[in-house]
Image (cartoon, rainbow, N blue to C red):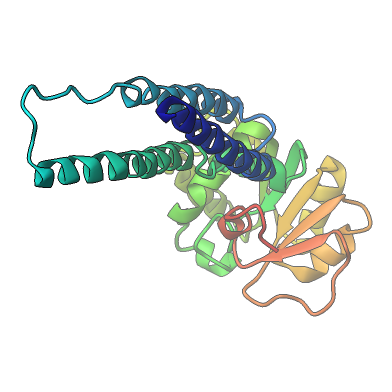
Length: 273
């Protein structure tokens, strides 16, 4: 009778585990990138490990307690009987908790890397043009560049990931040659050219906003990033995607013009607007 009861308990536990596992697998494949092979390997390991965990206690449960040579007192018999009745339930609850902990550990949502987010947000676009002022640089005007050029530290990680995946061109409107030198030196000091994906020849300078628009039209990128809404609107007819950087979201824009307070915030989440 004890063996039959234990088998039924194990069968019920496996059924509950199977139902739970089905839900977890469904959630996993909705949350994880299809190329996340590590998550699939973790799933297989979790199944094998949990199955062994469920099987291991079955042996000792079949052992009968060793009989005492002398007859115990009625109080002892009662205590021993109560212990035998409650022990399987305690073990079952412990096994359920252990299995649950193992499953929860292996099925934690897999956080995508910055590189994965960049690829998904850019919709596999392979060429990007980007304005420097107010996006890559702290400065927001050509007049400020005459004094100094400072790369925004918060944008560096995203910028370097873009250079690994895309053909990136940076461009800006400047007032003199000294401003160009300051910009190139700031980018070099920030390590932008060390990754191999961006070279100084791909940092372009012009004297007017029209010149920047002309650069983008000639390069024909998949994405252009700019702080000038007029430029983004004009290019929307010719360039597949636009990213308008501004703290204020425009009331109206073309369907292929996206907006974000900063470049790094645009890549901050897969569900970002």
